[in-house]
Length: 306
Image (cartoon, rainbow, N blue to C red):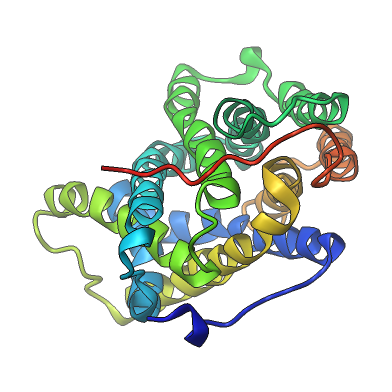
């Protein structure tokens, strides 16, 4: 599909940051759907597959076809596959660990986004970048109390660590290594990679019966796909190139206080002064994170994938 037929979006860095925050709120609702589907006997890989399936169907018309777009599209598909596979461990962690603890592990991704931006985009690590990462990591450290974690929960949280690593990489690819693609082309390329990575595992996990077997299951899958994948994915891909990987990662950390509230309101988990302090630290990271041009950096050309 020609880029001339694709919608164009132009807005300020402030609006782009707010867009990422709203997307993070949507991502923060994932545990609600995950635990409902797990109660119905659905496996982790199948749940992750469900999350992206509807988005792929909606965005298929925007698959990039031009020859010069194949390299960035394949790079995004690879990043999407790695992130989707890493989500299996995160889904498992959600099922056994408090949402605050699982969210703390996940919210370490700004540190990995900063690392990949430095390696792949040659983006300088300014004091503001270090401060934003430090605030998020500080919030994470406050909530991880080894004395209160059972061996089962600790193991689940360890297996969740690849998720923030993969998400940090994906943010950098979306924001700095796919400039030849429109927002919708970037979104569909990432999602196709996610589906291709998860499908074989989901088929094995479910014994070949990967479709929901009840009407309630279908409604959960549809709502999860729209609210926690399609809508926020489009928000991310539209806004992230406007504000760069560091501010994208920091603004996306708003998902952590959202998970605190979900755990408290929906699942009856603790939400006290400690959780409130962590939420304030995350919000501070959004303000501190550098905007484009805030420090010395140079953009990398899109990487071709053979």
